[in-house]
Length: 260
Image (cartoon, rainbow, N blue to C red; front, side, top):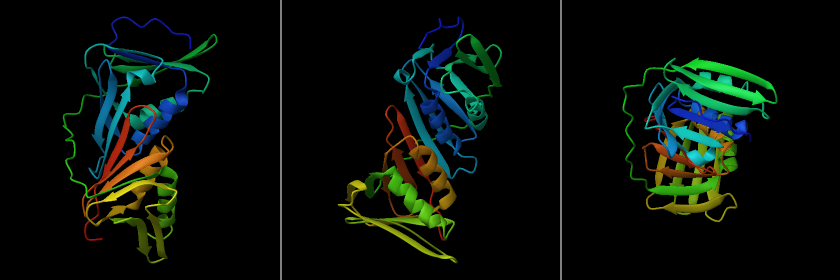
């Protein structure tokens, strides 16, 4: 990728030659977060944010090495509407070189696209940093499974046929993802030696029920970036889903439905 000199007086600027992986990660954030505050430093960008109803949370990190070029002075914060950011990124063609610059003076995030002698520029407003401090969850999980993302997506699609909720259960040597509703039932079970299961460790039988639409959005968007997900569970506690990505961290927490 042809590298441009960094702009002067900018706190944050990155270049990326392959937009698809970055756009796919932003999409994975957008299914949970409407407005989020990224915290940047010279090593990485980070986002810890909840959805508007405080049912789901995403914990995201992307190292500077992900980008073709990366400049960050100090630890600036960038608050944006992530869904609007994704709309701009969707206008970028695969063969365009992209430069993203934080212009604090104009309170704009500027997206430069270039291919040959043709250049385009988008500008979007940055928001006031959110005051809300999002706490890192502290949960002692009793069960853990590493499973292919495709297997999780298939079980969720099955559950979607019959219900708006899905029950996840872990017991010794067994993972279950089940749903029941007026239209019928769906049952998915994996034994420890299943081809889809890479690891299964259960200290105590655990189960919890979750809103299917959240799980479906997360599994589809995050699964597009990841072949393997580690799921951790305790009875009637938030579920943790850690999607393994080539660089960085993409972790979701989803609160259970109690009394469903």
